[in-house]
Structures are given as structure tokens and as C-alpha cells.
Image (cartoon, rainbow, N blue to C red):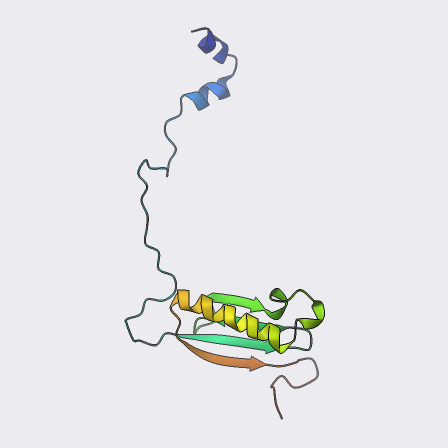
Length: 129
């Protein structure tokens, strides 16, 4: 009564008190079964593309689907070690590769095409002789 009389002075507050339940919120706790990655049958190979880039300063591992549009995981050697000088070390690349394997198991990718790149600029972009 007296509280509602004071609400006449605050129409915005009155509107919030008269609102219904929030949209999207349901009373029951429904859990949806979410499956990540492509759908595959048991024993079927699901391919991804692993883009490896090794520079003098870092090692990048980027795994996408076959078209290259969807990224499954992207990780660098610098994310795995604390010292800047160790970003391009084989140890950092090994730790990054281990994380990539763990992530791909959850996404159900069990086969990879590997594309490698090396240093760029005026040098050749293909590794090796």
C-alpha cells in the first residue's frame, strides 16, 4: 500500500517488479548431450589437417578440418614454456604436440594430414634441401 504509492514516482522500478519470469530460464535442470567435432561411425577414420610452422623464434601447431575453415586446436611452443629463449626448442614443440593429441581425442579426430612450413621472407618456405 504505502510502498506501492511510492512506486508511482519511479515507473522504471515499478516495471521491473511487475515483470514475468526470465526467458530462456527453465525450472528443470536439463542437460544436453553435446558431441564435439564431426560425426563418425566406429572404426572410421576422421581426417584433420595439421599446419606446422617452425620458425627460429617459435613453433606453431594449428589443426583444422579438411577445408581449413574450422579450427580444432591452435597451440604454440611459447604457450608451453616460460622462458622466451625456449619457445622454439624441441621440448616446447613436444609439449605442444602432446596437448594437440589430447584435444583431438576429445574431438574424435583420429587421422591427420601434416603440412609443414619453415622460415619465410626471401628464404625458401619448404623445409629441407
